Length: 195
Image (cartoon, rainbow, N blue to C red; front, top):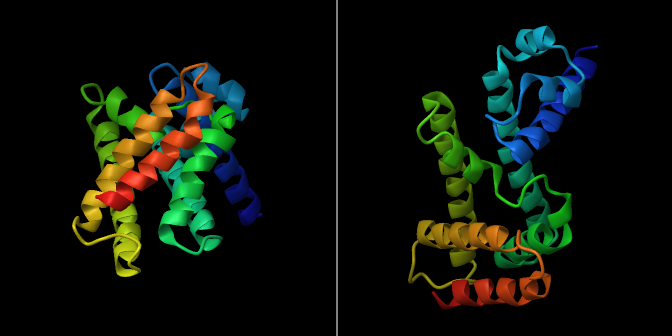
């Protein structure tokens, strides 16, 4: 029975995450949540404490899912850069139309809460920092494997990757530019190798 409850909780968090990612926290009403996750407001509050509590769990889950995706691509690639490239191609080209938003949920959260909700803003900053640390460890491995030079630190590579990836996601939210996706991804990874 405990596993069933955990599965249902995980599913509720995943569905809520998609809704929050699409609409943002402030634009997602309790009624929107109620319809999406098939729970009454009282049940949402009993399970998560508040809308903020459910959002917090959703943002954490989003970060875990993104890391899991990258880990999956790394596992099926013969290099760190190959795995990261496959991840970027998957997000920008293959699953672009399946995502609720072209903007990363962490980036969206950082923008949405900068002045409004200190605790959710701090959570988004903390999760962003942890994700950056995860990427930094990957780039440290790439340097160790001689995939990249040691001209930059692993952190600097991770920062460059995030800026490029975030920019690509935003750019390819525009119509009529899909044919530029692969050339721009190629350019991104060419630039990373030249840094």
